[in-house]
Image (cartoon, rainbow, N blue to C red):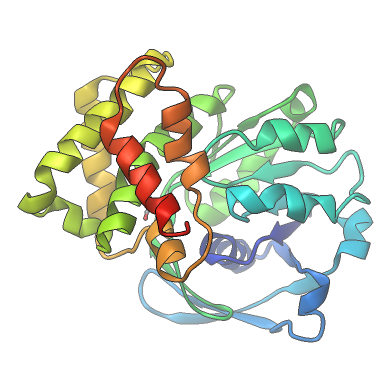
Length: 296
Ligand code: KPL
């Protein structure tokens, strides 16, 4: 049985670790040297039904990179490279699965680890961190994996144990489509909730109707220009569904901004701006600048 090593003990990384352990999978956390001696042996997972489950996992440190069998990366987009640079000892056969929001990082990881199977992951599970090693699973979602290089193409079997643990996991040879579709949702919900200091569900209040409409239109057009054939009504339906399913969540960008952390602005709204071409994207530009102005 493969051991799954989680890099990035944020909300989603911890929920995934918990769900995998509940299915009897072997799970470890890759920690940085500063965590040595501070590792909590058990993770407290609050399940969808509100039960607390204590999840046991193993700590691993960068000098043990050689032992990593499968690496699941849940750090923020802007932390991926730094975190991976410390793992140069990773065997070249170890698959690296990247789960960050936004796009544009995999190309750089490929340069750093040219031989490893490189896989992109897209997950819509809801997760909220409520404390150190205390995490709440807030919504069941889908998980898609797909190859980012040639070496990854023979790793589709990884979805089987993931599907058993997460309820859904599928392989897609067009993972960029799934990444872009998730990015489109994030490019609407995240900056709007972050700049207005609201939880996701508040976007459905009448006072946000106009800006929500304008921003959705901008993001939809950019994706359509990039070749996505999704119809606008389907995009709007998907957006509405995610807002409703995560209504009580604060988006990750909201949480980052409010806690004074760097956000994924560059990889989400920045991606929309970079791919807008001649299409005007005034709402995205304004939100992008506002988040930068606030230090995110
Ligand atoms: O992925 C998310 C995020 O916060 O980054 C959404 C789907 C918007 C849920 O909050």
